[in-house]
Image (tube, rainbow, N blue to C red; front, side, top):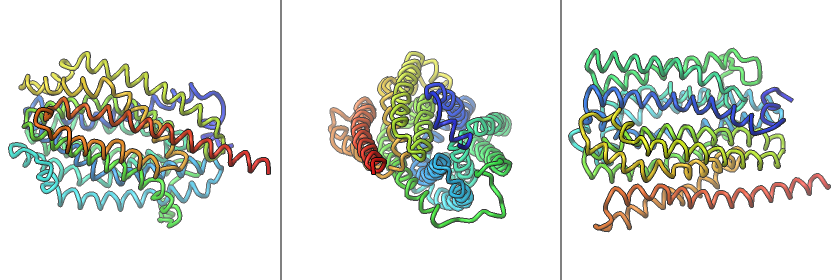
Length: 456
């Protein structure tokens, strides 16, 4: 058995899952630091309006980008299943299909983002005092989409075969560069939101170059040969089959967040600033939990390819317990120190800080519910069941929040930020319950079919 397959498919799971997840946590934290450095530096040196301008773009950027990020998930799942099954030719073709798909997708995103920035922000009801700065940030940010896509596709491939250190090291270098460039552009050259956007895309270019170099130097089926880069229709179709539902889920998930952001925008630029800062702080909790979703996806993918179904059950239990502990601990620490943390971002508005505290009390404290939901989603994707968690998440998160905004939040006496924020934990709980039931049903069916085949 291949070394990377043996790592995930043999031996005790708890230690392997923890040691796999930790570098993924650190990688996610560094990736989040790109945006955190943008917000902290622009907030402290250019003011809360600039912070709100950058923060207002987050939901719409995620909405546009998530569809293509889903395809990177599909590439990772195909690689993981191929390694587990020992089908290295499929792994090779997936890798050489993923890179050109990333480049084409990134180019398309650049056109969409640059051309539609103002329209998208106007549709969200972005305030007039920040919209011009938000448009500038978005247009520059989207010019770096090819770099972002190449990094995400490459990192997904490396994690699928157990290489969790390379993405961490590459983002460490890019993250340090991002912070330095933020200081140079914003503090030194006084170019505020445009400066932080330029720093971000330059850093993303570095991380993309490093990930491509790492793939080209491997000695296994994931090695990238530039002369062999070619889209295989069969493998691209597989990436779409698994990744497109994940991308649609992420995009529709973002639609609900866009609607919530639009609702927050209606409370004014101060609310936008407090919400942006709090959301960024919560992001550190999210990426720590999301590491267990990625872990569940890749471990489940390889073990599914190897037909080790009982081992997948243990993976689910370990990941659920782990993500609950991480979510409860970090989420409530954020609430405990919320004012001090928000003060790092916001120095000129006590009202904005109080709004951030309010958001964190409703979202950060029960954030573990989102974590357990995403572990189930990741597990099902790793098993190749991507449409079902997409449908459940659309209904349980996206549709629920849209209905909540249109009904409960629309009632004048309930038209408050508290009522808006409480929709998050309710939607997470409902979606997790349905996905857990679906997993149990699907796994019982798989085990029964496998037993029947073995008996025959």
